Length: 444
Image (cartoon, rainbow, N blue to C red; front, side, top):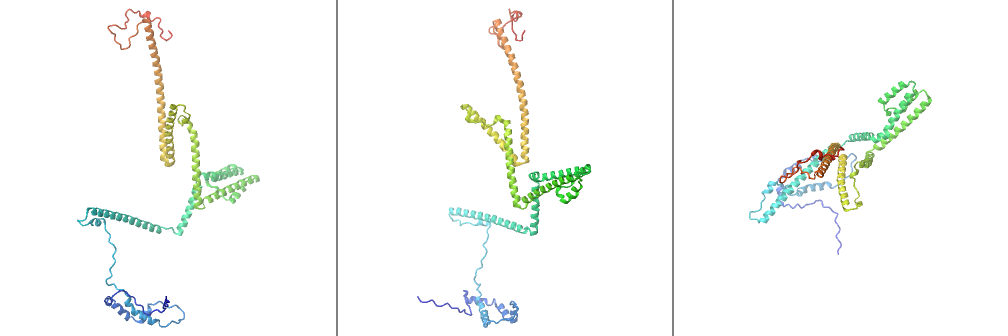
């Protein structure tokens, strides 16, 4: 294989680009650019040089010769590098058709029915895609507007710093307002502060005036407004007894220690958002556990009020009938327990409205209890009346039985009619003698 010829490093002074235009097209462009070339040729050399960038300051450097002729040759070749625009089609943007325009498209009348049906489906798909595209375009524009608005409302460094400060204050306020924190850290501080004032007031030369001063301090000032110097000069130095002064100073030292512990806890929990969020999560978990424990404890107490409806063990049944009765009893308990669970969920999830519903249900239960008491009272009276009538009935039955034994003639039932003119009659009956030995059951 022959060796490849060496690559040429010689660059031709004139480069000719084949634009694909015919000489006729190029000649047709010359009249169009005639004014341009005339103005370029008429422009003075100095004017042409004024358009170049200014030279850098400093001494001039040597330049290579032979560059200017090449520029002239390139300038002469420029007209041939202009691409021809004759006959080049202009690319137009695609036309957008509306739903009405799409409906106007029809196949020739002699098209086959199946083709007509397919064409209708194509038009429906076209319109569906068009509506989907319009919807997505509207969403995109909405997102662009929201993004532009969000960018316009971005926090400046000053606003961001103010926001962080406000958020820190809010975290401190929320934490310091928590009932658990108050009872654990803040309430002991207040109690110690008031105890010091009471003790110091009783140690002053005038205890009555000291009591008035202590009441004023409790009402107008908090322990955080007072420093060690105030305690030393305004309280301790006013106490005449040295031992009392030492006792009050120990109490003040304890108060200062409690304040430091409280402030340290506030800082630890609210120093940043992560610490505060961790405290919120911990508090939520502890609250849920405490609520669960209290609910289960109270359920154990309140179950004693409904012992008769609590579930029973079906395995302890000895007969089939007993087992069926226990299962029926447990089904009833399951329905009642579901009502109980739903009520608890309603109260815990829906707040004050659920509280009202539960209170109304309890009120309705009270009304029904009153009705039950009244019904039980009426039932007791009815039973008493029934027993009385039963006793009277037994007396009447016994009297009739004895009357039958005495006369030998059974009494005619109430409403019975004599048959063939025969029946119960008092004829030939001495009433006075007949009832002399009759026992009426009243002891006579």
